[in-house]
Image 1 (cartoon, rainbow, N blue to C red):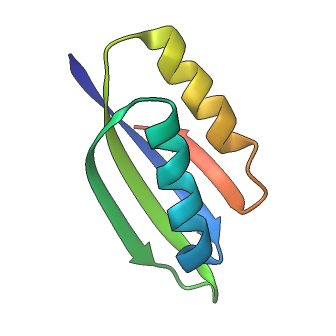
Image 2: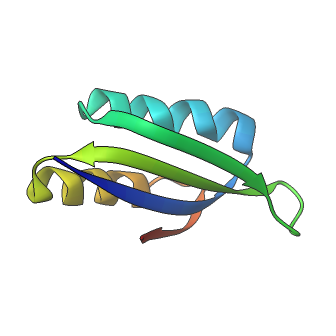
Image 3: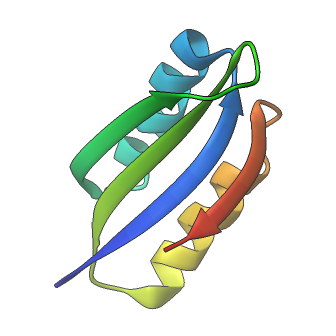
Length: 78
């Protein structure tokens, strides 16, 4: 089992954080770590999620679901 890290810039961090971690849970990924940092832009935060990813196909699906969220400004896989 490998750990994969997804880094996102998100708007409205309080509300969005709950929704995004819920999506990770609904897709049955184990959340290994979560880091939320402020950015220079008001009301935009950097969210880094590390998940245990056994299946690459499922991980890609999770990435796509997260990318479609309106409050996700940018998303990358580290």
